Image (cartoon, rainbow, N blue to C red):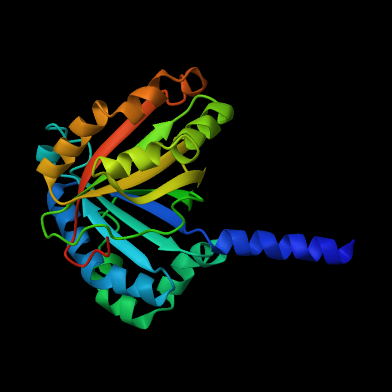
Length: 253
């Protein structure tokens, strides 16, 4: 019995390590100027520091109103998305950064800002585990004009959330995405953070025009129309948040 339990535990550990753990951090600033300054600082200091801390893929991203139907909701925000293969590594993220002398020096402007005038005012975080069918965060495009599309799919019950995940993985919606030119950077199931329960994904496109063309193709794709009409997938997402992002120069996807 003990040997069986050990085997199960080892199998579970391997299953976890085979899928990336993804953290999305949204830093809210009091002005666009501060958001731009934070974006630049993270680009030069945070990305290499997180790489040293065991985070394999890191991106610093900004949301421009002209790419988000004129919405200004996120223009004072800086998004940082990082992936690792260990929940333990994620839990030690800030500890590892604080003991990294190079980072503490390179990011000094972040720590020396006065309490009355910090570079950012608040921070939100969500943690995902990558889908079985998309186990790793990947860079799908290196074009300097590339855009990334972050989408949160909320469900009103856990069961509907699991069914929406099944729609993507078992139903074949991810394959439909790929055939329409909508390449996944990642698909993940939320395990902590806001908007629960949800699944979250990030798509990569060569540019904004390619994104629009791909979605237009998707809307009329027979595979999507078939899934959309399938009653088992009805009411699986009751709220969708869509954010189009521009990666910094040093971003790794």
